[in-house]
Image (cartoon, rainbow, N blue to C red; front, side, top):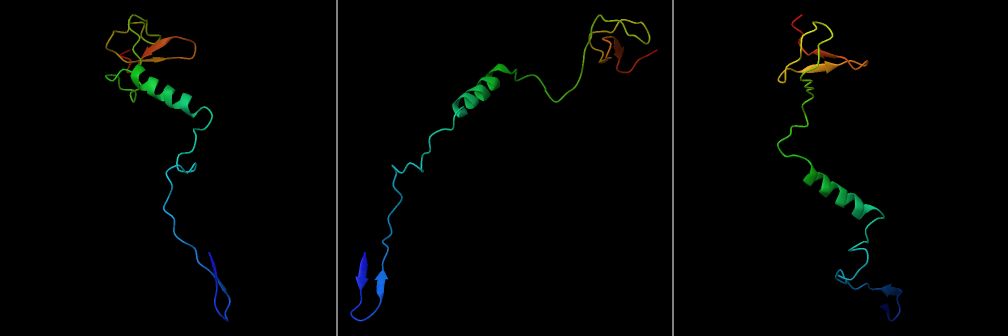
Length: 94
């Protein structure tokens, strides 16, 4: 809206308009692949066991033979796996 004063410069007045709910920037369309990524994360939450602790780094090799002491590794004993595929007690008694 433009108004011209009687002998003065032209003054522009801008009226405030509230935000429109049908504005396309208010609800942008999803990015390509975004829905698939969200669905994947939701499926991963359902697929993981809530009782498992993923912060631990324990390996159990029940029935394997320790390469150092040649004893059988028990089901409750922690073990290490070597690069060649052999196992060793985490704290080897031998």
